[in-house]
Length: 288
Image (cartoon, rainbow, N blue to C red; front, side, top):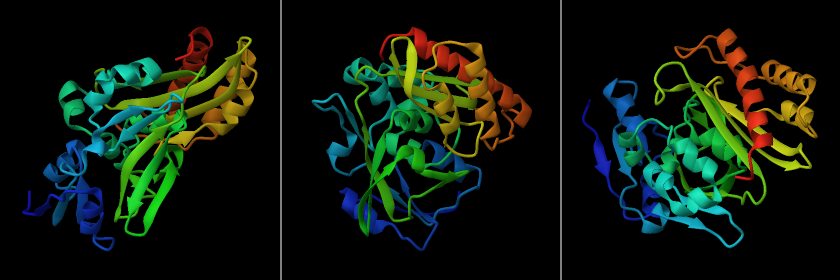
């Protein structure tokens, strides 16, 4: 790796000030699990890295509010999130998903903010949090704004974040009686990059689906919400024809990413299969 400068600001505001909106070689670093791989392979050569390791402790906190919503500091490690008893009780779908995310060594180092800001469509957290309706608090030199996780991504490794903006916190609304499912398919080992991620949040009223949110990634260049499939599944109670129509709409409305994890044809079939599995799982499981 080529030499680079290293900054260790003591606050989030100082970290924002240290970023350069006009210089792509200046980057923030949280856990660095993805960034360091890019540097080692020569994909990215920074002139300066701004470490977030020493910013205020509150950005490493996990909090469940009175209404049952979840607030995550951007510097929460994936291991801390996985091991949180509060999260396991209020959002068991998050706990289950994290146990399949990469491996323990990566989860010990990787941070929530970095996992969201990196923009890699193969990541597990973005589609799951998008399906749960989460929003990110983004802090930059021009002020603070909120961005829905599903609107954070605009392309392959591309986000709406400016170079002088950082994700500070993530708010996840309470599940209450809603049901949530997360599934993925990996083409090799269980902790490998997936060929498809799919997350579903819905309410089930008298045995029928209501208010569904379905989000996929890995098979696509970015986190993608399946709005047409959601409409078709409104009121769905188990008939095969409706489920097939929802799968057809999903496949027709998605731009697929062909890569080493699967061809476009393979990922289309995966989407059909896993959409059906996720919906059936939501219908038969209790609120989660």
